[in-house]
Image 1 (tube, rainbow, N blue to C red):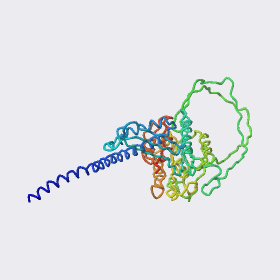
Image 2: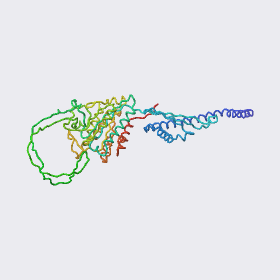
Image 3: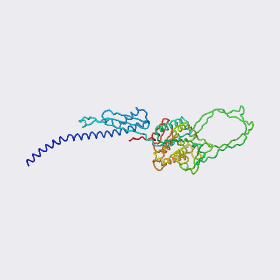
Image 4: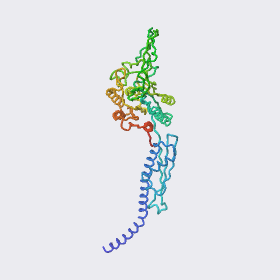
Length: 468
């Protein structure tokens, strides 16, 4: 037993030496693994930071590389890159037009165990490419062209803002992208255009002109009969906006000096304006069973523009907008919906099934500077200044029906709603509820905010994604 004990003591000494010699590379291997683990962790952090920075920079829509660089550096710092790396982070930016942006970031980390092997720092690099995933888009611009838009340069501001959106989307669309706009100017009514007079979905009586011989008295002022002369005032209310002024006038006596025969002409003429079918046909986009009524001797401004990919045509139509008439929101909404539809009366939009198959987005942009000032009398809209409860209920119902179009989320129409220089909280509540969600509602208090609203809508229709 004593001999065995001596042997074991000798053997334990040899094993210790053996393990001491073998342990060096084992420890080094473990240290290298730790360094590589640190590098892998830092690489993941850098990649996430570069992805975030690239998305933020490209979403800013800045044309300045200096501004893009500022945004990139800010996001890298916020994501802790500077603390994780040793020394300065080198960045490189490459942009390809308005469609692609590449960000490359390089840096080093300090090693622990690998420094003993002569590698005191390890290089890491992250690259991220962001593309604008445009998809196919159909947009109906439903724009308030009522009399109140003539005040304070509001119509000029609308034209500028709407053109910013149109140009933004056209400038950034891909060559294979389907991008179309429709314009639906509205006030009391909507003008569908004389070209549609004989369509099967509309009921327009024939224009007529009758002549009748009549006689009338010829009168003249009695000299020296002027009385009650002085300044008089006048007031007028149009589209909820009251204006007033003054003028100088007198009252006069008149005498009959004879009679004359004249040709009394009575005309009925259609100028393209349409009214509403009875409820509930006026809140549905369906193949008309009952024809839509054309209104005779009614003027309603510029005719709507059906979906087109012609940018210049859309821009010229926006420039031609004019302000007149009172506000009836349901008229604009129903024709904006129809402009995006595949069924008559307007049928230029893609089908809802194709929307999901071919990556289509349909968007209705409703802009108004005021509340409904009219209500439906079927087929006409009247009652300026009266109770517009019915019109507001129809507006809300139309918004819900439009948002619920299609069988699933991919077939839904997005509604963007903009109030412009509106102070009435009821109007804002109505339009906020009309929008698809809170992010789709814009309360523009001035012309700068209106332009920002249209820019925001354009950006929301453009999806940014990391290209893998």
